[in-house]
Length: 75
Image (cartoon, rainbow, N blue to C red; front, side):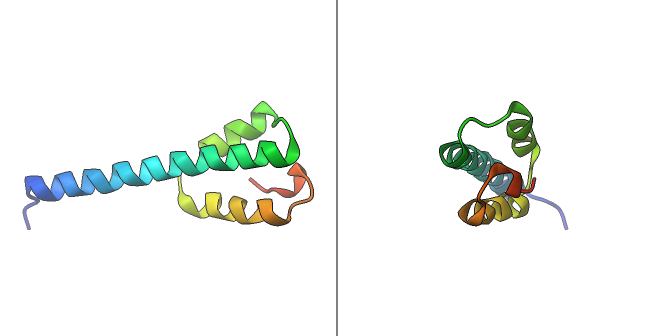
C-alpha cells in the first residue's frame, strides 16, 4: 500500500507530539525531583535527559511519590 502525503504528515505529527510529551515530562520530573530532594547532580540530570520513552519516565514519576532520597529513584 502506498503512503500518501496526508498519512506521512499524520505520522510525523504523532512523532512530534510524542517527542514534545517526553520532553515536557522530563522537565516536570526534573523540577519535581529538585523541589523534593534539592539541587540535582549534573550526572543525574543528564541520565534523565537521555531517556527517550514514556515507560521509564512514568516509572520515575511513580518513584518520586515514595522515594525518601534521590538514591531511591532508579534511572
